Amino acid sequence: MFKNYLVVALRNLFKSRVFALINIFGLGIALALCVVAYFNHMFEAGWDGQHVNRNKIYKINIFRDMQARNQEYGISPMTLGLEIKKDISGLENVVRYMRSYSPVKVEHDIFNKRVAYVDPDFLDMFTFPLISRSKGILEEKGSVLISEQLARILFGDQDPVGQIITIYNDSEKAFTYMV
Image (tube, rainbow, N blue to C red; front, top):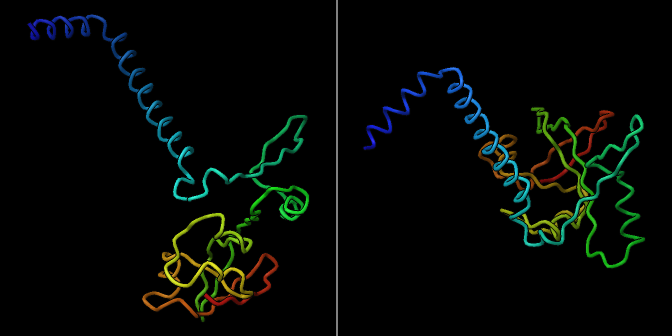
């Protein structure tokens, strides 16, 4: 019986090949779009899922008037964080985050890496696992945290704790930090 259904289906497909190809191609595109939409939704819904305080974390966006329409930006002025902390009561922490691509120098080697500048409360708000040292390290002036991957790139198999790195800003001014 199944063989008969298959034969009838194949006959109908061969009789109207153009419509069958259009339908199969359209179904394939629709299915691919659904898979992409699902993965996009799962990424957006779970991007901060590893943090303990994920239900209390909010990001501030600003709107700018661009050519007679409001354009949303995911960035805000750095001074806004200080004003929010001062003017709005009931906030536990306010953390400013700024990143840039900067040259990072270790001894004689220079690497162009993405660098992020954060406030000392960053590790109180976000719960990233630290391999060594404590989260109070951000309160010390002249100290920097680096990822395991960046430590391997900059220092190889050496222990990065206590090593010195130099970061250059956009105006080529050098700042020295201890890992």
